[in-house]
Each structure stands twice: as structure tokens, then as C-alpha cells.
Length: 124
Image 1 (cartoon, one colour):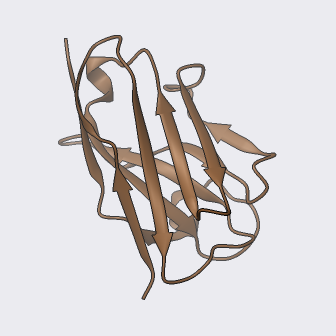
Image 2: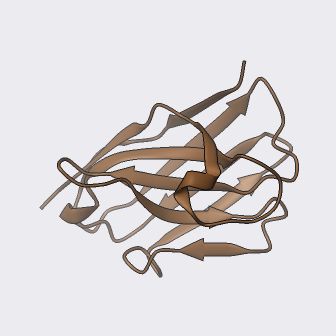
């Protein structure tokens, strides 16, 4: 059974930092792009950051570009999201996901394997 488990969320003051982790188990995602997404209350889920299998290609939403960094450790089957300069508008549930098939893609519906999410709350 495929599992993606996010961790590292919590409460942080505006301007602070958090590092999210997403550990995959049940299978390896060799060759698969993986990404981080978030959903704030009353809003649609949005794509934040995507990383290729090799780590050599990344995508960032404009809202987080320059503040968030996605990385992965394939030996540990883990993806990370380093979040700096956090703002109150970053408050949301953060999800990681793996693409449905190998290769690259940034469209959310290409991502078929999802974790349950971790809450990030930024106080102003």
C-alpha cells in the first residue's frame, strides 16, 4: 500500500521558517516528479512546488517563489519543502503528492498519490 506521510507543520510567527518532510513508503517513486500543494480554508487547492526525479528541474508558484525551496532525497524516499519568510497568507494544510506516471508535469490532476496533509499556521 502506497503511503505518503507529511510532517513538520505547526504554528510559526510571520517571518519565521518551517521545513516540511514527506516520506513515501509502500513503493519507490523512481522516475516520478513529486510536489507540494496547499489548501487554505474556503479556497481551492493550489500547486506550490514541483521537483523532478533527479532534482534538476523545479517549478514554483509565483506566490512562493524566492521563499520556498523544494528538494528530495531519493535514497530516503523523502521530499522536503523549506519555507522561509512565512506570511499569514501561507496558513493552510500542506500536502505532498507523487505524479501518476514517470516524467514531468505541473498540473495538479497529474498527481495521483497524496498524503493526508500537515497544518501550517502563521500568526501575524
